[in-house]
Image (cartoon, rainbow, N blue to C red; front, side, top):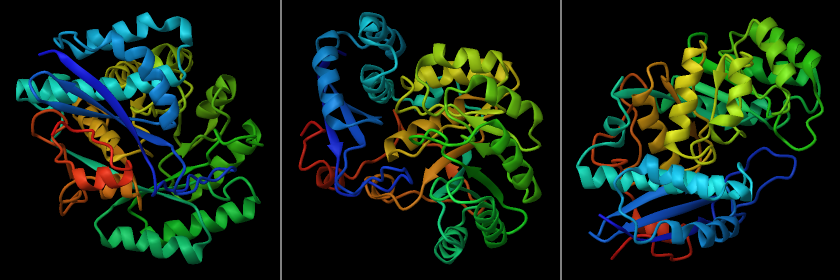
Length: 378
């Protein structure tokens, strides 16, 4: 099986807000799909967390390293891409684009083998995984009905984040967290994401530690991105002294960037994003190293249904990864999958068991959000 072509198309028209200081609008390009076509008529899909123009530019460099090559090992082929482009800057648009290529290679390789990606990656530690409904913080009058709605849909785990948290006052922060806890009930998992990777994040260690004390009073499961993403010393101290588990690292790329944070025990929970970190292989390498250090990997998943599918397979392949992020209210999660996502009576998602990523894509919806791009072989 040889690679025939690699193409990309940005998702436009329904981009969800990110809660950022420089807020997104529906027509902003943030997520880009990649398709790998093979000479036996198969198509694999991947997802990239960056602008469609940056992905297109990166593909102009990477495509010649792929087309015409025998696809006998997604891991080896992906590593060749990393090694051939190291001088362009490890961790930027090239690495983000390789993330999508890696997912697409595993998807098509699994289809060819007739096996789910999770099995090829060394699973299965589980056949189901709990998704947590992830939504932006807002005033309780807006946020509480949304939380109650997701609870009625079967979600039993939730994360609220960004928005006004850490940007107004400690009283506002506590009022929002208290309202969220009351809405989801005492037994539901509730996590809080400060969004410290936002531009010009104003807070440091002491704010984060004081805030963690408040979060502990409300039974918060973890405190995410409490500091700026490069504050290794701050995260190390915070994890050591916080009574709430500390998580982060969604902005890091490739396993090498995670090593200092893992070695320093800077997190309780580490959160690579498969659409940025370098793909499935990098996520698994980070997860295995983190588990050896007593941490667990819970993937960052504010991206697309393709990323969610990859995270489900990751959860099957790692012993301690028992949660995945579900970006609520996003058409790029809900609309591009045929028949949608279904929670079982315990609020769990099945890990796809079909070949490759095991998802049936709604091609018409994908075309709608990619401006009519033909990602699939007709």
